Structure formats: C-alpha cells, structure tokens
Image 1 (cartoon, rainbow, N blue to C red):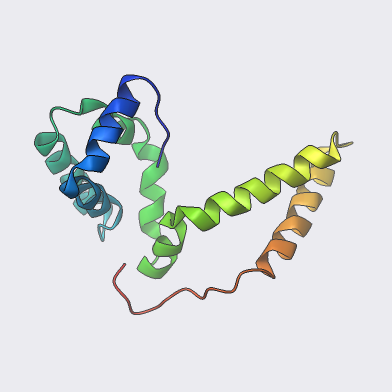
Image 2 (image 1 turned 45 degrees about the vertical axis):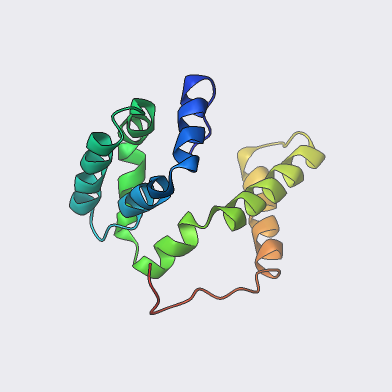
Length: 133
C-alpha cells in the first residue's frame, strides 16, 4: 500500500521474507467491515511488535483506508489489485507530462477523462464475481 524508505524499508523487507506477513496484511484489507479490519490491525500490531512502522503506516492513513470498505467485495478486489492501478496511473502521468501546461483545470480534467476512456478499451480482464475477495 505504500513505499517506505530507510528503517521502514528494512522492516518491510523483513516482512516479505516472513510467510505470514502477507497473510496478516491481507487479513486487514480483506476484512468484511471497518470494525473487523481494525481488529485485524490490532492483531497485526501485537504479532509484529518488532516491526512497528508497518502498523504505524496503516494507523496514519486509516481515514483514507476506511472508505474502501464501503465497496462490495468484488470491487474492493479490483481496487487492491495494484498492478492494474499502477499501470493506469503511469498512463495518466504520461498523458499529463507530454501535454505540458493547461489553460485551466477543466482542460486537464477533459484530457484525463479522454485518457481514461481510451485506457478502458484495453481492459480485458473482467472482475471475477462470487470468488474469494
């Protein structure tokens, strides 16, 4: 969910080597409700005391994370599949960068809208419904 540097990066690397690390993080964003996610985060904090910056990142950004739980599980799964999100962000940044300045905000929004429409034509993978979130 985030990219860290310094000590936080070392901790995340240590987490990557721990088999349970990914499952513990998944239990947070795959929770059915905000309350369940908070409980999972508390369990992560207890279990991963040696890596406090991991849970601190979640706590600092909790207000930005909780709206995610308002979506149905299928949509949430599409959201937390970051490869497609990062690809879309990269293409939007490229469009903005190559165009340079804009006369106003509306012009930039129109360009982004058209870029999103164009990117949507390339999406071939449907959202899997009825599967495990």
